[in-house]
Length: 504
Ligand SMILES: Cc1cc2nc3c(=O)[nH]c(=O)nc-3n(C[C@H](O)[C@H](O)[C@H](O)COP(=O)(O)OP(=O)(O)OC[C@H]3O[C@@H](n4cnc5c(N)ncnc54)[C@H](O)[C@@H]3O)c2cc1C
Ligand code: FES
Image (tube, rainbow, N blue to C red; front, top):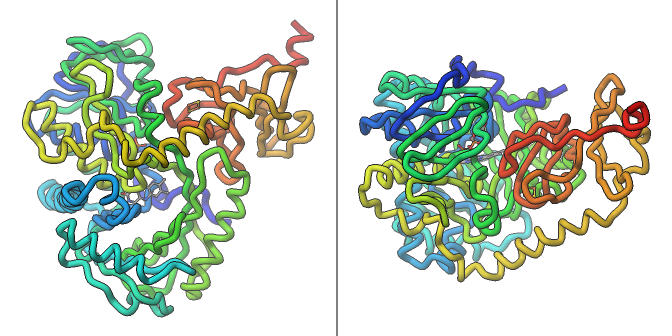
């Protein structure tokens, strides 16, 4: 049986860090110890700021531990599509900032001596089944206009199977994301930065200083960066401009040397993504809107079949894991001052499936903004930008979100909790309430309200991940209802079961 775990978390022990046990004052408080938060904290510490990072789990226990670790300036929404929304100048800035992010990771790895399997390698964009070669022609022209003159069209990618025509993006990168964050943590501590794990930021207050409440303790700071992947402080605005999607990954050994070291992606929507880590072949894809598909086990099977058709030398599956990406309606991350908030509150979100480069861009950009330096990327990534040109996509996603509230009117997935198998979950209707019931492997039922504490959508059971996923803005909860992905910042409320009510 494959492990239901990412290869990264199975092969890296994250550094010990204690929870916050006192009130602390720093120049900058960063909430979130994934790549975005840690990159921002690293740059600020290098610039001489005192910094505290708060994470409510072990370090990098969010999506940075679930990634596939492609570092690329091949934008998966396509340069020719981005150009329609952001113009030629916009795609130049996007290409420049993503290239600079790969370069910066390369520099940090060398300077800090981080042993994280970082490698430069080429990336190949090939046609998905049924896609037209003109997609590649349009993308090649747009990539050149964006300044990526080295991108070329080839007859096929360097795999044994015939991928057909493709574009090659030279000098991309890959790494072990958790070992990289380990290295950032080491450098941060050396420079006086402090990291507090298992420290849940319950609430933030703007002002000077701004306040972050963590249980009984408070961090005060001159500036605050919320890098929780999905912001926990911005209740509505940013969530109307992005949508959450689940994506799935499998890993299987291949004989050494049988697959060339390269990154690869097809042009599908959703698309497939491929890389090697040592001799582990990692293939991802099968994305769907979070909380809006009930077939994640089948998605793993389809991914496996797709990969084996192209890489028949694959051994048994060793790993399978899934995670969530946030898709902004205009394809680029939101990095900068948090809209409608105090001036010293910053946010990074909207990874667009490219959160490693976007998170690294955030590190550089937010450091400049906090230090009062100008940065040429500020406008493109501004969280306050109005995606007018993406009005159609915006309306589509917002209508989709609004439609999710109809779940309040529908019956449950099952009539009674007795119908739920072991190690599985389902929604049960009880009067006006909807209850998220998980039956554990021993047969005990665990019940929570199915109403997401963010804005009240009904969560759905994800059978492949064994999580409750909110279909509206990306909140995710474990089988017992504990929140691990915002914007909800608290657990699903527990409910009294009917038999407990009777006993009371
Ligand atoms: C399957 C998969 C494949 C991917 N592949 C790629 C890829 O190849 N290349 C790429 O560039 N991107 C990829 N991505 C996207 C990328 O991995 C993520 O966007 C990125 O790692 C997110 O980093 P982050 O720092 O923003 O968030 P996270 O890594 O999620 O970090 C946020 C942190 O905030 C903490 N937190 C949340 N709420 C609180 C709170 N209230 N108090 C304290 N702490 C809190 C969490 O514990 C977490 O550690 C992929 C994503 C997935 C899921
Ligand atoms: S994430 Fe917004 S309602 Fe659940």
